[in-house]
Length: 95
Image 1 (cartoon, rainbow, N blue to C red):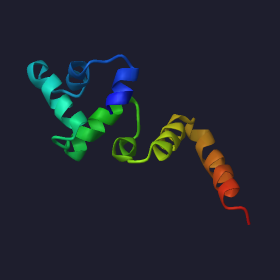
Image 2 (image 1 turned 120 degrees about the vertical axis):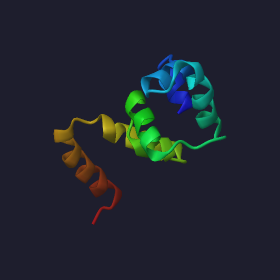
Image 3 (image 1 turned 60 degrees about the vertical axis):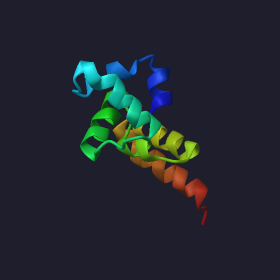
């Protein structure tokens, strides 16, 4: 989460405000989430993911490679997604 936020050039406060946290406490709450001191409830995590433009599963992914795949899949046009996923899976599991 932190890496993506910093890549966008956003402050912790900005992310907090975007998801509806009061400006006075948004930096501290987002910091706690990024450090793993607290884990946001799923509805809050969904808001964070939406604000950052990533799928919810991206925030919970422990493997950078899988996270990159999730993000690439998320960024595909919905019409392309099914075809590209099938092609990718065929490459991974040739019969």
